[in-house]
Image (cartoon, rainbow, N blue to C red; front, side, top):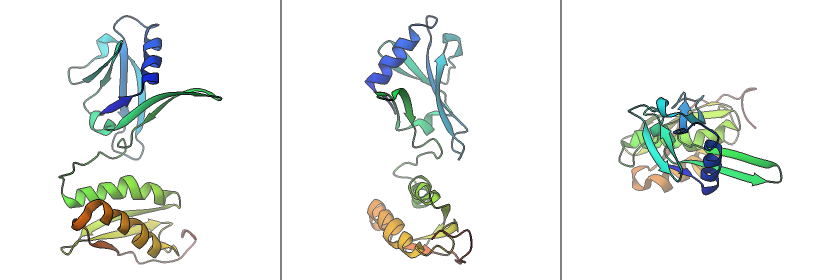
Amino acid sequence: MINISESAQAHFAKLLEQQADGTNIRIFVVNPGTASAECGVSYCPADAIEPEDTEFPYEGFSAYVDKESKPFLEEAEIDFVTDQMGSQLTLKAPNAKLRKVANDAPLFDRVNYFIQAEVNPQLAGHGGECTLMEITEDGYAVLQFGGGCNGCSQIDVTVKDGIESQLIAQMGDEIKGVRDMTEHQRGEHSYY
């Protein structure tokens, strides 16, 4: 579920030595499942542990996660890195903004997760986005592009060489291809 590196575990244990007995850590997500999701780590005194919390025991302390945050912290990683610039605690939670779907979830949900988690972060660098509109009976994912993607001169390359090839590789026989239903209009918003 949550992977806390040995260096991060040692860092937490050292910090907790200076706290009241029974204090552990809490890992949480504020606004889980939204574009404004933020992950955090805080001290968790014994009297702040809720019955619905999940405990993850480590050497010398436990990490507690509240019920609402738990599905959004799947595959999260916490590390403590020291380099020339100093020390830094890093928390990576790839599912914080969007709850990961199960491998046996309906095809639409799995393709939509892929679009939101893999494709849209890449398109955002160009001010673009795409939305899964439907999956046709013959196995085509129909997408609507917006922002900088609308009218982009490279949209065909993005669709065929990028999104379509990745989806087919990941979904196997379930997806035959991708179709773009956007009525592209060039303008100041378009990425070139």
